[in-house]
Length: 75
Image (tube, rainbow, N blue to C red; front, side, top):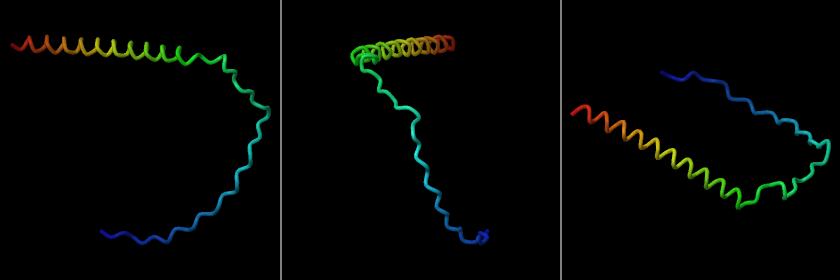
């Protein structure tokens, strides 16, 4: 099976330069006091990881128990 010949591709035309976007009003920076302290965020992350780990262990335990019961029924 042979490829049919296609005409050569045309060169692409250059796009017009994008216009600059000017903000309507100046943006005020967020005060540092409103953001939570890094140690508090770290504590939240550790607590979340601990919760996820406990739930994963619970799921694994339930799966192991189900497999054990199923295997015990075969013998």
